[in-house]
Length: 332
Image (cartoon, rainbow, N blue to C red; front, side, top):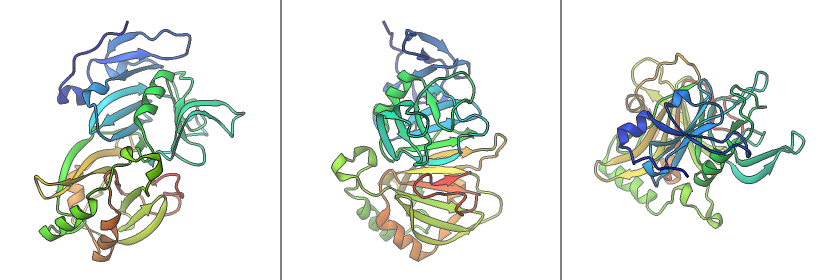
């Protein structure tokens, strides 16, 4: 019988020390509990503690260097699992994705109808999160394989629009409030305007099947000094990006939670990511405050904002090699 671990506080949850691991290598292996640090998880083991944060939007971070999948809900890490990513010649692409489609009983149309249970599709060309064999090293054709039991649990909390960040390294999410409307100076009238446009809009996790709406993403490139507004993979607006100061921005992902009434501004969950193991992260808030754009672009953005909107900062250029249709938002 499984035992329960007492609810941990926020600091312990983020630290991730002393997490519960469960073996799920195959259907014939009985799931057993182990107490160990995340770095000591063996192939097929995972942790699952949804009680640490029972509600809120989910974000998934796949660390290729660690061969681990981290699951966050409302900024708190609720799960970690071992995984197996793409082998040499079939490397899993790095970047910021959203779940495009879910299929609990999916079979591959490319690899001899191979079963891919609990599939969360990340690209239409075939990259997904799904259950599969975990030998302890990258072995897939590009997908991220997960333990069966973990894949079932993950499938139960993701939704179309869930952000999935695939990178070499990352930081735990943290929350920030940017004064006023991001990308322009603060003004009380502006805040009221944006707040009114957000009113009544649901996060994608709360959409019913009959009310699926466009998923909006925002990508800002320090290389091009351009910013793009993307709706369901199509660029619907572009503008010039002004950057204060010098130095790279680093790679950051911001997920919009909504308007903050306590301090007038937008409430975000921020995650740094980088495909370079030795990459240096600039603090998210500092990077965000360096940016402004044209009034025309801000006017186009305001009515498209919704809770769950993803805002990406990148030092990569915004060219076709970095983004491909609805497959992914930005590739490192």
